[in-house]
Length: 122
Image 1 (tube, one colour):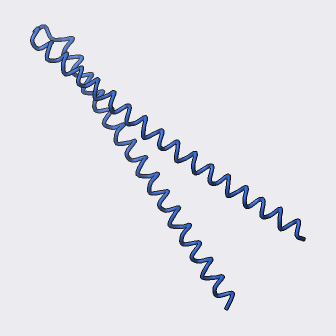
Image 2 (image 1 turned 45 degrees about the vertical axis):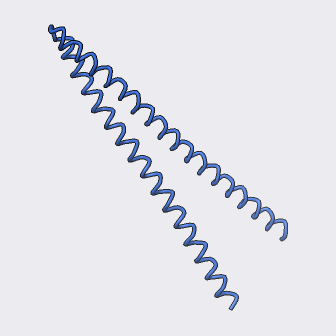
Image 3 (image 1 turned 60 degrees about the vertical axis):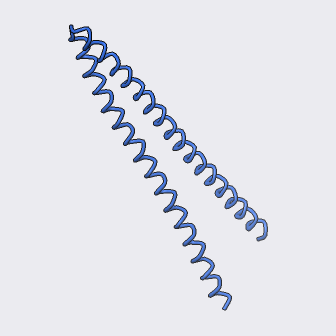
């Protein structure tokens, strides 16, 4: 009966580990998608800024030039906001990666300590 309990315990631990890894992969993928999406938004905004700048430089009408200057300022503010968001998302990604590496190092150290303990018992 002890073997059956050991099997159940092992299966339970495996299922918990699989769920944890799946959750981590999902979170990582979600974060990468958010970053890619914001980078695409940034690229779109850079294109818009380029068009506005071209129009402003080409324009000779003073009232049109003032309107374009305002639009350019708005576009620059939006780009700054997007860049801040991308920076925050990348920082979160780096933090998760560092945490995962620290957890792996801790697990490896514990495993090595167990192996040394087993060798000393022999």
